[in-house]
Image 1 (tube, rainbow, N blue to C red):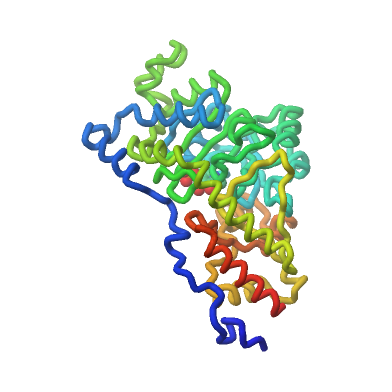
Image 2: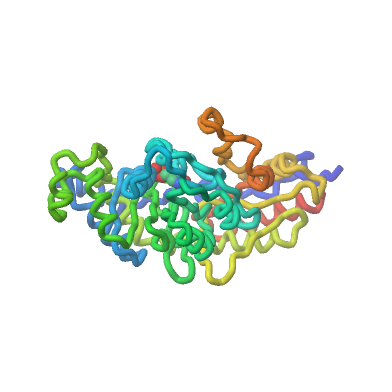
Length: 393
Ligand SMILES: Cc1ncc(COP(=O)(O)O)c(C=O)c1O
């Protein structure tokens, strides 16, 4: 027995106070002032603030059109609505994602078909996506999971060949790029979330992205009834009813998102620098499989999930987590339950035994902090904790 280990009563490797280094979102007086200003102007509902955010975010992404929406889920709903997704259609997405990637297609009556992830990247496997296409497949939703861009060239090539629309779920990937282009601008649509935990936090809110003018007009008509008045007649005639949904983003959240956008890249850099340091150290420890994306992919980190194989070290993942926690590390198992195993989908015919690759890799993922406010000292202590624990393997 190794008495040095904190789990056996030894001193902890991590002694620094962590709350400030891990605090997110990082709001300042500028965010407060932006909100207060709108309150003083009495613009807590109707305001130009969301449209200002649209312009700034579209410019940041290099996109033609950006439409501010209630949240990311609503933005995806708008994309599927515009594409005319309906009963009898199929939409493909990974099972390893947040539920919001799948549910809007379900409400429109479509069947969601789940596909495998690549165990190295944890992103949609383009080959498995291809295999699950049928004559009913109308759309695919690749998710740039945890901030790592998907292999978009392959996904788009398969989709184009089969006349399938591509909707990028970029909710984890503000600032990430694929071959020099921001994610969310590569497919027919992209969508983002500004929920408080995201790299670009506004509290709540979302953005629909497209380079297609007609798609944009149709999305405005779906849920922004006042704005439809300014569109060509074929859309403005619906201005007094819209298509029955209200998708307007709250101006107060738009104001916070605008302030946060100014420092998004700077904040992404802090996460990247700290996490890269940690991953470099983990690479040389047994059991850890660290993925290095190719040079044409610029990733960001929404979360910091790594693959650990206890079968190689003879220390099971739950024991590793217990040992690391005892050292003071805030680590846990991955937090997404696989969607194809959820009662909602199982009751509708999904086989929980499907997707063996996704199921296998899901048992091997641990989530580590992203160190958004760390000056580098806390991450050094985490590295020490991992090295200390790995010595006992
Ligand atoms: C992968 C993914 N897709 C979609 C969404 C939906 O975004 P929102 O919470 O803004 O509706 C989220 C939000 O957490 C997400 O993580």
